[in-house]
Length: 283
Image (tube, rainbow, N blue to C red):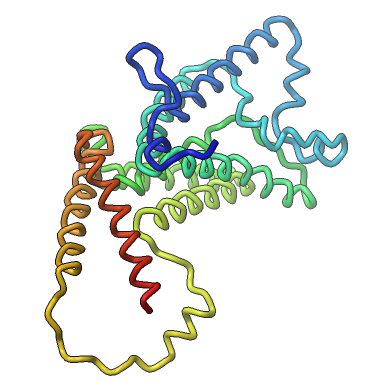
């Protein structure tokens, strides 16, 4: 069943009056696996857990390829695990509400598989390993900071400054302890999160040969100004509406929009896309 655009921004289910989003379901899975890990250790079966965190030697020697997906669910209950889950529950949900469920799950999957793929390539030179979801969920927070750079966190400090400081500390820690593998992984994961959200929100694209070719073609002569058609004026009104709603989202978050404002944002987005397609067909 293919989701419509409106379904893509709706919860997966409801538990009483509480909505359950994809990010909420992921938190539940991580908590369940943390409990399972603790039970296995208590029963003296901790040797089984060695088959679930990522190890380049295990993948090459024993073909344990499931470790590419199982490593972030290798947890032990601790206060840091609780903090990580609370952060992911809040910031992950905000990212999902803004970009939609499909894009959120695609981003999550990409950030999940990127570290083991990088470490597997490095495993050709030295054994590598990885366990836990710290880098994955920290990258989701960086995606939130890219979406809401001016959102106020922790004593009114803006999200962009919190993200920048935490990323700098993380990388300096890796540098100090010569943890080059983790430094490379966190750098690539952070860059992926910024590029993914930047493309969705700001619409920038990577230059292609075709576009570069167009840049060197002389621009056509300017035509004398003409009166704006009613359709152009309506487009400008839509842009004003979208800009005001995006400004509100940037400062207060996606959850601050009323149901009417969400419908306006969705309708304006669909209308602008329709007019862009019509304009391209005329050309």
